[in-house]
Length: 246
Image (tube, rainbow, N blue to C red):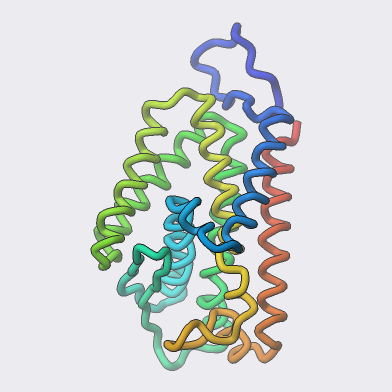
């Protein structure tokens, strides 16, 4: 937000109000750090439960949509009460290693990119409100097309309706802050399971995303985990700089 929102401004002004002053920026940075830390401690997932589920949705949608965009097929998405989930997708055996690696990386990296778009959109009230509507509708549409777990079918639409309600009913102050806060949550969702980025396996069922990238691009999984953790932080910082730039 580049200017202070003055009471004398006309109601049709398109600029989002500045909660989004320096105090607002400090609060967002604190929220990002607190969220990343809480996700690393026992019980943190449940303290941040709605954002834990949203982080899982962002992650799995990143895998599925990237597979579809690159010529594969996004088949289904499952989300469970403990905050875990998985995306089922299919792609031809002829796929090259780059595309396979991109689909694996899209889980951890798709959310920061989407979050950055939300944060940058907060510079304009129209863009902020539209972004909230797009996110809310995306949650609802994804439920109809891909979500197949009972828990996901119940909770994902509730989150979508809540976000749509904010976009239609909340004040400009609230909408401006909400779109930035959700953007920050998406960016730091890479740290939802930080140990997962630096793990070779994903439980008894298969390889982690970073291990799958290692299989395609050879460098060790911990290198890719570190690279994505750093990239997510850089994306968050740069998007906030753009949002608050005069």
